[in-house]
Image 1 (spheres, rainbow, N blue to C red):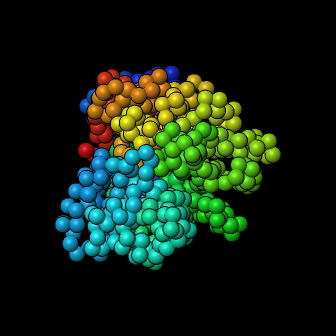
Image 2 (image 1 turned 90 degrees about the vertical axis):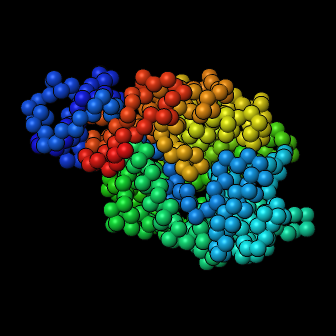
Length: 542
């Protein structure tokens, strides 16, 4: 075997084997050939064609982001509203964008955090008209689950009734659209929804804008040390974007693509998904899992809770399926061999998913399906052991649990109420009950960089310091890093060639400027990616 590259003189953490730390790793082609201390290296390793001096830096397995919307991404053409805490600040940023872009036909904004509203109220067209009246405007919430339109935007998109191909428009007591559109993630990001948005002229939905977002996200992933991305929600229409990126040499990280299975999915659609899984089955682009939703999100009270919302006691949210119907669907998809990613944020939504998986196992017998509950934001304590018992993966985003995003005084915490705060993102409790934890960013809902998520998982405190929220649910540095490497690889049946640094596995690794195991917890987010290697090639260097 010819050794192509020897990286030596640093701290190599394989996350496997008996030794926690060695100083070197050797690569042959696209695989890892050897891991150990240079003093013990065989002759062929010492004769490597290329030597890379790590200069004391730390090597980890490449990060595997288990839930990253690289296709959706962040759009530089939109007004950026992340961090705007008041309606006045939202208005200032939109007006500034309008002044800088006077010739644009649409005003589009992203990152709106339900700011400036009381008691769970929804934004209205009238509010947006007061900011933008001369042209249509569309504002996406930070989680891309809702859309906020002004009057001209409602007219441009033809919104006159509740049921729209891209969402559910809220109506006032006279049956007129208010400007708030829910269910956007379920309908607007689906095949029919995106086609409708394109046809009705929303610039954000155009193919060119989608491709630019994808390229930006792929570049950011590699710069963040991410060597495999699980893109959790796509239609067959979207595969051309990934193919184009590969053809143009822009596909940095490896991709696992889940096909979206909305309630309208047909037998023909499922047959198409099966065919695509056979077509896209290499180690660069793989199609396989299915994405479903059982509920929506907490902030606008559309996640399904067992008990009513604290600040809207006449609702418990809703599930997209009757529980019995969902159990039948999961049983059928499980029997057909699909792996399922199910979005569930509310405790009743999560229970409904676990009940459905249990029904499937009873009907079909146990198999190594590794169905996922994605997000697990508010979990009833009695459901903690069921993840391990049913072989269900908890795919979670530690950054979402940060107190400056979801904690006291913010929309998430106020909606569920203090009596349920102990149920918020229970990382430690799930791990102690034997669940597989797969960590992810949920980009662009939160920052993509894995070390940001590692810090949040370890501290449960604001990113810039301060009082932790639910600190008993924090995990260790090692546990957090494993969640972003081996845990996420395991979650998509890829632990045989990713997630640890072992001979024979893919040569995907990240070189960090410092050893995160020897950094104060509050400084973990500042640990920088120096290099990213995919398939034995350096794809990024700081």
